[in-house]
Length: 353
Ligand code: ATP
Ligand code: MG
Image 1 (cartoon, rainbow, N blue to C red):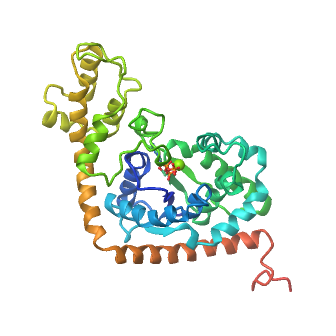
Image 2: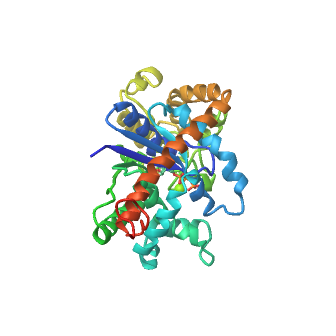
């Protein structure tokens, strides 16, 4: 069996450091590992429209932003197929068939959908498209016969739902679809990066993000305003690490060699944490260290983005060609699905007559 990756992002804004530690960084590693036969990276515009139906301009204007973010973190169009979801109409058809295999109550139990409905104040007026997006996500994954889906923790219920759909489909219509595995970040702190406000998840919708394309000055302002331990008032006060966003970010981003370079009083993050817990280490000092750490990670990304921003027609070509390949691949799967479902009425080997 081939090793195939499918993953993606909604074009509802530029990508942020939560996307980076939750999924993007891993994608680039996997891409460069040479262990995968095919890698599909999808800009999920159709999914973004499920909760932005009245704002198509937002979705449209973020297509190139997300593509630029992809290219600037090191996704390479020679190794990964970058494509736009709505240019692959087979995904819509697959979703329509999968809808028959999922109950309304099963969708209602999906904890991520539940939380997102609440966050968007959709309780009394949930768009049907939004409610069913886990099904459309199953179509996205299975259309490419993905074996591995590298995503953040919030996607776990989506993957479980997708696996159930695959099992149900295969049990009903015969072995056709491939069951995917979720690949979560190894580093626990990266599973769900909190926002700079300390809220549980950095999310475009919550406006608490550090974007990959933020300037050094913007990152500086954001880090300096970051949520720490509200009871750590004087430098000499003992401080808390749990729920302290600055330390969570250090867990995700800092590398051992950065201590010798930027914080030589400590040999590792644990020593810095111990000092903070004892008291005597001020927030500003930790934040300044975090800034250096973040800057190490973000400056090459910014530089590559600047370069790609001057080549937008080429970026469009990459998306166009990627979408063509994705369309072809999904069409092959759809043929198999139609055959399994006995709706391939005029096919050469299984037609009606
Ligand atoms: P929206 O608010 O529009 O839903 P989002 O910021 O949640 O946007 P998505 O496009 O829904 O971003 O998510 C894309 C990918 O990034 C998914 O794999 C998701 O798990 C991952 N991801 C998003 N936010 C975080 C985060 N804060 N920490 C870790 N991973 C994240
Ligand atoms: Mg999301």
